[in-house]
Amino acid sequence: SAVISQKPSRDICQRGTSLTIQCQVDSQVTMMFWYRQQPGQSLTLIATANQGSEATYESGFVIDKFPISRPNLTFSTLTVSNMSPEDSSIYLCGMSQGASGELFFGEGSRLTVL
Amino acid sequence: GESVGLHLPTLSVQEGDNSIINCAYSNSASDYFIWYKQESGKGPQFIIDIRSNMDKRQGQRVTVLLNKTVKHLSLQIAATQPGDSAVYFCAEKRDTGRRALTFGSGTRLQVQP
Image (cartoon, rainbow over all chains, first blue to last red; front, top):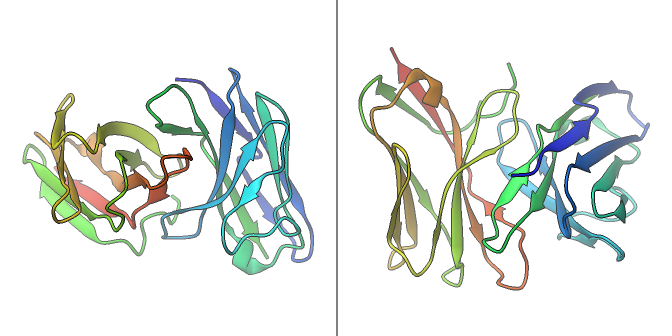
């Protein structure tokens, strides 16, 4: 499977600021996904990021709060805007490779908002 | 360590015993299912998958069973080892037109030496 790298791996942020998380894949993939994992919770899909088109957001997530870029087939960014303590979570980048449909994930970016 | 799994149901087993982790899914149209393992401080790791046209699939020390009648999925781990301690999530692909997965709530497996 491809190697997925996320940066930063963790950060402590101040309320009201924004942070951009980067996701780099070592092979070209069509579909990349951004998930959120709140403390003690499961993974919730934020949006699907396809190269060359606008990201598709899930119910409860909006572009103004979580703008996403997908400039090429190996890279994507997720910005968490105007952060509040409720945004403290692990943010995970995933990608789908091959016909079977399994998703592979990076190690996640652990954000703590004070 | 991270707080992943802090509020999740916990299954505690003795080393060497078999473990069974269960998952109920909601969408009868889901056609693909995956089990993931998430260790503290890491991202989810693919374990095994199964398509809806199968009811059983075996891997190395792991078996996934799918009961579509009651929309139930289980993961069996044989001869559980301390390294199996983690949070386990089932995931389903609900929409054949998309590749995004919907995750279940997770179970924390604790292996006692």
